[in-house]
Image (cartoon, rainbow, N blue to C red; front, side):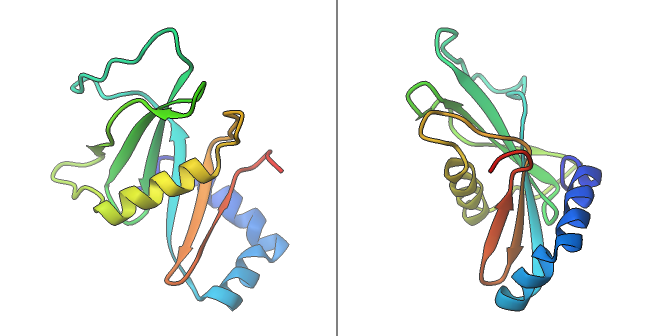
Length: 140
């Protein structure tokens, strides 16, 4: 489930009003899934140790077709992965995202971080069977 469905719905409403959703679906087919990337925390049960002298962020990806999130810590001072990827269930017995969707999360995340380490969150991604696009409100 998406971390903040209400916020996602607000952005979707604005994109519909602007014709962005209609145009995307006309070219790429119906949107069949959504992913949201936010800032989060490392789960307490993980033993990830971050270097306190480096600029790091923890990114969390949620999907409307999984009841589990994926997470990743990144050092942005030299753009290095600071941890392995983890999955956190949002409900009991939730299925973890597949490798394909974890790689998708990483690709979208990395593609929306500037060379100087700048980024905006949340990131809202719309997915069809043949394409996707990501919106980061407040960023050009």
